[in-house]
Image 1 (tube, rainbow, N blue to C red):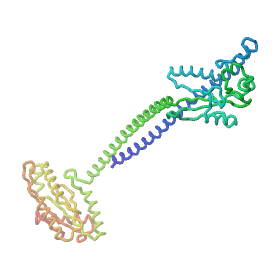
Image 2 (image 1 turned 180 degrees about the horizontal axis):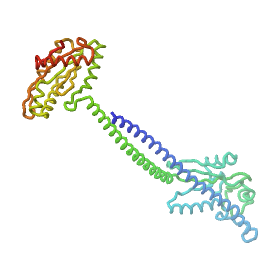
Image 3 (image 1 turned 60 degrees about the horizontal axis):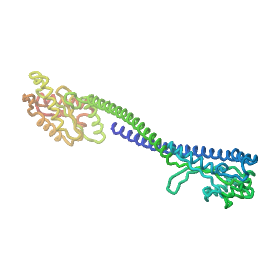
Image 4 (image 1 turned 120 degrees about the vertical axis):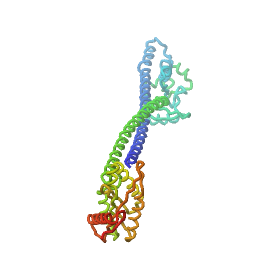
Length: 428
């Protein structure tokens, strides 16, 4: 019962550990994915800031220097080259070189785009989504975009976008009226794309796309390490708990077994294994109470072995003990429901019968005992035969108390032993 109970506890504990493992696995998986996205976001943010720095450099350093050289006559006035004056051209080139280096280092490549509704280069043409973002940026509804998107192949990527600086008067020299633009610019862009912009507006946005495949793969590896570490940690803890629980269960079972053994020894004869006088008294008194309630009769049969003392004196006590054990075994095969035989002395036994119908039933029971358990016994090659005398007292005819009934049955037995040894007799 204890082992079964502990197995139930261990089963509940195992289910709890499995639930904890599943929850922790989900947590680790989600946390590592969020961490991977956060790292990709940092990379995108760094790239955006780099692009913004390039944009600022072109507008505050490179272009002013070109204009200075023109003003000083060191450079002809119609000079224009996107390599030195176009932020988009410079940014795309720098990002290309950067991706080459990142690829060599085994790092994730970052994709850059300057998207405009009215670009000079068709590569910078804003799609419908980017046009909507530009519209919101100009309406000051947003100034930063970060989202997880998916391409046609199903590959996920992080999309981050920020607006470029608003158009100023200096910007309009190249993006305003074509008549104000350098002639070499008009030769490069004869279709007049990129002109007629307005001061104070945002003409383009800078976007970065960071593929999440490598980040997610790294996150999965980290998550797997955490999950497997958690699994083995929980498994070890569970096995340790199992060990101690089962050890405790074994110890508890042993204690109960010893307790039952001691309880059995306290109520049973050590030699024959039959109930002893103490056990017999408790049982008999319970039957008397039960008989009083149910109006049933209870009989006491006091049994004494004839010739047993001679066995002990002339042969040996060891043989006498074996005879007692054989007699006890015979008694056990004889017992029926509501009957009990106990050893209450050296060669004395007592039987209680509950719920018998009449005196003739007691006579038959006593005679069967004598016939069956007084046959010759082979003990270590010695054939021994003992007889038995039985005295019978009954409730409620003779008495209603245990002490009186046992005493009366004892007296009846001695009377039988004196006048009719090897037979039975009732209380007179």
